[in-house]
Image (cartoon, rainbow, N blue to C red):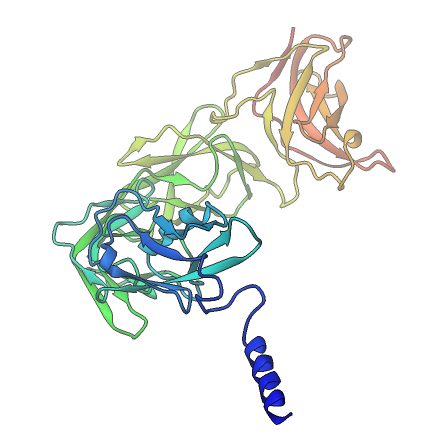
Length: 438
């Protein structure tokens, strides 16, 4: 009886130590094994497989020569890949390790049952990260360049540095590029690729170094030279800026560096005047001093580099107050052009688009009694015609001039109407172009 109880206890302990589906004992499912795995550019002797712990250890060489990165597997006869797309994911062994990134894995399964095994892949570098850049770095042009490439060894398998530090040799200004997200640093054939387009560089030469997790600073020998690219503002050509009369205009953009970039103001009659400006050191912003007696209306701002126009139009609406309505374009003009005093000929009984800063309650579209297009006869100010503006959901607002509106020259104005009292709440400045009805 005593021997029988010992035998039963032994069976219970043995059974409790075995997983029903996966167990780290190769004798449980000897038919499910990865016999070998071959990574392009990595010697086979650098790869070891632990069948007891279902783990694959890969030691990454100091330099990689592979041109493709998908591994191949040798499996036992009864095994097959659980998901072939996992092989593409295994190309991650060739890159640096990001914080909190999970280990790679590959699954195999039985050809005749639901049994499966997951192998974990762990990578180790041959040595710490080493910068090998000896040639001068390629110049970085603000607005045109995206990356800074630095030669290195032992890139794959090592932990990603905490950040890259850029120090301006002349001013001492520092800019940091944190590597807390995938994409800010990458690897291309033993090269560290830094995504630096977002950094607010000043012009000049910069020393580069990497701050490692242990606090050590890994320096790059050659400096990178930051050059000025094409100046531009943070708005699409043809868009409209607005400013209340009497206030300066703050603009943002890139490459707006003092001594090379200037601004001038365009009037609708073609007159231009230079604008005084204060510049940020990194060329990302400037404050333009508007003429003190500038009347509300429509103007243009032009950017010049070395006194040469760049050919980009930026419209500017000078308003009486922050909420005044403004006309940005009538019949799609003057989009992508500075304001012009040239008359505009419009037809009757045709849909005419009008772009303005409408404030429409959410969900209310169609013909609205809040905004009207008003035409005032240039020679008879008392002769006024109003046309309701239709505001579609997914198209430009528009209106139509009826056939019975007499020929003449008109000033175009948008008026905001109180729907209850039908009184004019406020109105835009007259459009810079006289509308001609023939």
